[in-house]
Structure formats: C-alpha cells, structure tokens
Image 1 (cartoon, rainbow over the protein chains, first blue to last red):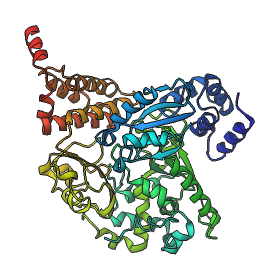
Image 2 (cartoon, chains in turn purple, cyan; image 1 turned 90 degrees about the vertical axis):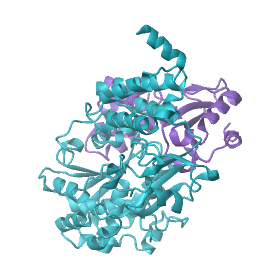
Image 3 (tube, each protein chain N blue to C red; image 1 turned 180 degrees about the vertical axis):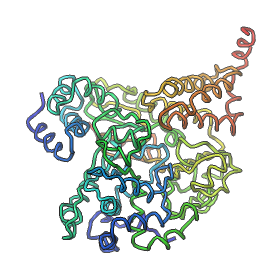
Image 4 (cartoon, each protein chain N blue to C red; image 1 turned 45 degrees about the horizontal axis):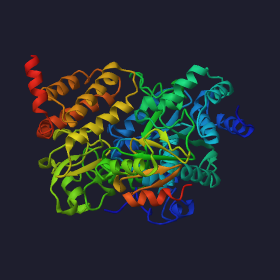
Length: 154
Length: 423
C-alpha cells in the first residue's frame, strides 16, 4: 500500500523522536502528500509501520481537519472565512466559487480540478481575505483577483 | 522604539544565517554559554518576561520548575500553533526571522539542560515549515546545533513538527498529546508539563514570541529589559491588528501601548473615515470591548481591569458597518468546530450557543433567546478541562453585555408572540 519511498521517509522521521508514535502525524502527511488523501488501506499501513493500532490511527487522523478522508481534486483551495476574513468580504468569495466553478464547501468540481475546504484562520488577518491553493498562499483577495489566481491552476 | 523581534525583516535575505549574524545574531548564545544554566534562568526571571501566548505566565519561573525536576531527558517545545483567529504575530518571526527563534530555543535548552527541542508548527503555515527546516540546517552547519555546540560539548537537537489543523493544540497539554501522536485533547492539570509533559518528562512549552525575547534579554541584560514597557509585564510586544484600520499589520511596540495609540497613532485610524464600533483586543477568544475602553494599556495587568484580556495581542477592529451579532455567530461556529469533544459542557453547550445565534441572525429568534444564551454560557464556564469552553462562553457574555442592541434588532416579533402564546 505504501510506496517504498514513503516507507523510507517515515523510517527516517522515526529517528527524530524518542518513541515511534510521535511520528504518526508526520507519517500521515507523507502518505497524504503521495496519494492526495488518506484511504482506509493507507491508514492501516501507517499503523502497521509504526506499530499503532488501526483504531488509534483512524481516531487521530479524523481528529485533525487537514487530513483528508476522501479523494481531493487536483488543486485544494483552503479559504478562510473566520471573522477577520469575513468582515473583509470572504463570504462573497465563497459565492463566486459557487457561481463560477459550481464549487461548494467540502466538495470537488465535477471535472476534478478543484476541491474547496473552508478554513478557520490561516494567520493572514491583516491582509484578509486569504486562502491557500495547495501550499501556495494568497492574501488581499478580491472578487476578480481570486478568479485570476485560480486560472493558473489547471 | 528600536525593533528587536522584527529587526532586519525587511531585508529580503533575512532568513540567511550570515545576514542574521551580520546584525548581531547568535551573539547571545556565546554570552549565555559562559553563564551557569541556573544563572541564565535567573536572568530571565529578573527580566520579568511573561509568556506571550496569552496566559502571561512568568517565563523564568516556568523554566525553574522544569529545571528543578530531576527526571531526564527534559524537553523544550515551541508553541508555533498560532491558531487564535486575529493572530498573525508569530508568522513574521517564523518566516522572516527564524534564527531569532532558533537562538532563543538553544539558550532555553541550555538553561534547562534539555537536549531536545521541537517546534510545533501549525499545518496552515507550509511556507514557514520549509523556512524553519532550512534555518535549522544552517544553524547545524555553523555549529550552533548538534552534539558539540560551539565546541563546548553541549548538545541540542531541534526539529519541526507540523500540526494538522486543530486550534485546541495551541493549549499546551493538547499540544503535547498531539506531539505524542494522539488526538489533541487537553490533559487535566496537575501534573503540569514542567513535571510531566512530553513522554511524561519535564517539558517547557513556550510561545514563539516568548522564545524570541530570550536573545534580547541576554543581549541587553535583565535590568535594561525590565524597564521596557509596562512595569509588571515588561518588554517589547508584537500586536497584530486586523479589520477596519487604514494600516493593518504586525507592530512591535512597548508592552502596555494603549489601544487608542495602536489603532490611531500606529494603524492610521479607521478606514474611510468611518466610526469605531467595537474592538476585540486579544484574539477571538477575548471579550469584545466598546470604544470607550480604548485608553486601556494593552498588557496582562490592565486589560482584565477593563473587562477583557491581552490574549495574544491580536486587535480586531470593527467599524460602524459591522453586524456584531453575525460576528458573534461566526466566532461560535469556530469554537464549535474546534471543541475537542472531551468535556460535555463545551462540546454540547457551544453548539447550542451557535444554534441560538444562528436563529437570531436568521430573523427567527424570539425575545427570550438572549437570556437563553446567557443561561447556556453560565453552564459552560468553570466546567471544562481547558479554557476553550470558558472562552466561547465569556465571548458570548461580553457581546451581550456590551452590544445587546445588536442582537435585539434581529429578534423576530412574530416568534416572540408565539413564545408568549405558548407560555
């Protein structure tokens, strides 16, 4: 289930900690980066590798909102709508994603291009509204600006 | 005021270790390593530094508790899980001045005789992760980290540990649980982390900004440091200002600068010449204030006297156009989403408060709903392991106390009639 590369990387990560279980979050990140999400098989394989019970790995992976439990689109939009972004117009941006791309929060466009997740503060309150596209950070978003940015992600 | 925490961040190469050294960086380490570990702790104690994450606990005292515990190994954890909405003050340190944090951690490691440190970095800061990892490697190559720091036989190893999107992990025991590969649910205290923390060993958890102050204390000495800003909680403070000011951003100012000076003198006042309606002074979990309170000094001692808290120093400014009932609702959605689910009053109560606020904002709330909100909030406060539930409840109470009319204007007359008829 896990690629050889992922296994090597996870084993390296283990070396940073005094106990194997501390490497659980980093290990889940390795797998999510490779597959785009955490399938039940992948969760089980990580548990086997770190000797952590499957139920515990599932419990941990579902606690944290940045782990994905279904396949994502090619690009993941993480848009903040918390208070600072809300008062600077983030809700209108959510509407634009809906009208322009048919993209609802926690869903993926039918062509598999974008997935949208609403975020709770990404630490860009002074330059709100803001979003991450994959790991790229964008702030001072406007209604036109967000469309221009997303056109670069095919 | 001369900048220290944000010194050199306008230099495009500020993350390069040579640039950091060229403006006096890594000098504080040499100074600290010539002192006894206990003397370094004493210096931090005498500086009066209080933790910048929000609680304001005296840093030197926290260190001395962990140092006094005979268990080994000891750990120093940097809380870089900057998740409090409104807060973005640690980001410039993490992304533009990473060596300042690393230097602070090495000194704290030496003081505590801890050989291992972890930076628990929120998952939402992917850029900071790459920058920190690169900076750690540079510090290693220069001999500031590793098994023989500066040839003095001192060991300190530092790693970045990425969180995965859970506000609660900013609470120190939840952070430790998370670092141990578990769900981020707070532990009951005592025992405190200084005695039983990461892997049940003595552990100090300090905020990014707190650790970034350590090299400054070493550089200018405790006495000079203690004269900066407020006498009871001295030092420079990073304030992050968002919302309807002309120039939002992160400002390094003496601790105790008034809200008025922050908003009007430093941030240029309210945008578009609108009127100030309200201020949340310390991040979303601190009580909201009306404009008549803005002459209050922003520090740990004075803010509680004026009905709020310094929190993380995250000032959110609202002009007259904002519907504060909607702001309160959005805040409650946040707390509901982030409640870890461990304590029933928080898990259930915050959801109820969100639901009541939702119907008020939808125009279907009745006139008893405001009292009901207050009632639910009272049943949360003091009944949970960690401060998340308390924060949510006291935020609701502060909105109602200071801005009751904002809720009343949404109340439906029809729904109120129905309630009366039913009674």
